[in-house]
Image (tube, rainbow over all chains, first blue to last red; front, side, top):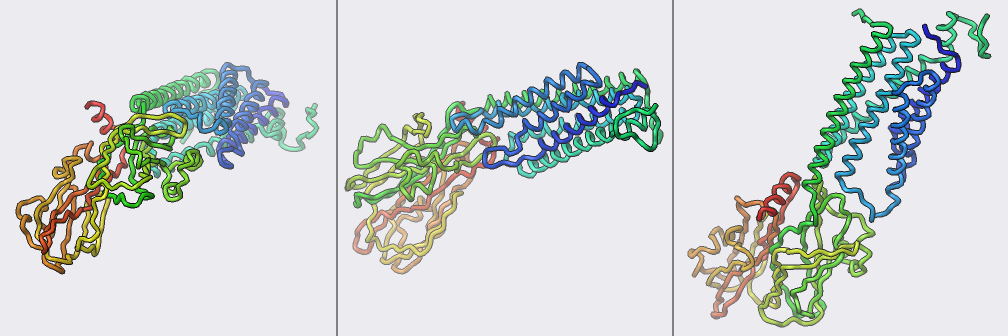
Length: 215
Length: 319
């Protein structure tokens, strides 16, 4: 079993915690008129910071790509945040809005693909293959369902009067993101501080809190 | 159920390959749909707003020099086009006794606020979104500046220049709006009891005669081939038929005039607004001839389908 140091273990836990909160921030939109009080770029910044924490454990191409993708999403959401302030004279034509929606959805797919794949690889690294397989399964579910929701959202641009379908798509998207947040919450609990000692030193009690390893 | 996990590098690789295939398939599907919808939206995008044709006739008394009259026009624009109409001119009209104003906000029409051209842009749009288009209604006010005492003359409006709140303007063909001045004579002894009008062309007026009349004839609006679009009956008899000529209307009798817009109609007709005048020529007991206008020949399109608008635009571009 390839051991992770306590520092790596804690950085994994911290990374997943940030990603969990990032997803929750993306989920809720509180607007004061055209101004977003919880702008999306804050959520993406947290996710990006979480990804950065994983680099201590694994320096993979996937994680590097995830960092780049999260950076692009941060820039996109900053632009989206400032768009209402540019006035009535600036209007993005609808085809470009749809393209923007599709590209953002694709980037989100890629982002969570890379993060969850890296998570699975790290789990294999610490010999937790069952959890790794579970993570892979969650990844596939996310990819398929998120694609269906995104495709439905793009197609519904042509039928904006179909209110019930719009509501159904929004609810599905909300539930999916909430479920994704719970996946990352489970991953964070996997790297709980107490488990580090239990797994690496087979300790079941008297876990040192000062970080010193038993002799 | 026992789960079998393939451990080690082999398991890792198999999982990665499956996930990679899943990602590629998902991104491919999303990409195809996004590009397809984007391309479609570019194809159906309107280069300029399209004004739906209106064939309107109004019977105005021109005696009061400060009179205002209103009518409305409709146009389609892209849903992301936030412009609104704030003015209208009819370049072919050289009559300085009337001036025209336009606004998309009906509250402004009653308060005259639209005369201050910035007012329109401060209000939220009243346009109806249909698919990727918006259907706008423009309220046009005809303001009289002087007495118009020309007997039975028409001001005919066909081509207009509309002004938008961003400073741009557009030359449009609105159909035909005919303003008939000074035609109504208030002393006709025909008293309205009830009227009911709908937007789909069905209407009913009930009148009571105050004298003995003989029906001389029935004249359709000259604006469009109204007789091919509408049917008008007088107490169940087709108003344009020979059966009605010479019919007697006795003093105190009730006359019901019904109008309908029976199908079939092509897309151009379905998307046009009609408010037409027809006239019943009557002779009273003293031998005096009267022209009684029939006012509720009215049809306004109820557009709710994006795909129908597409077919309409396609049919217009083929012409």
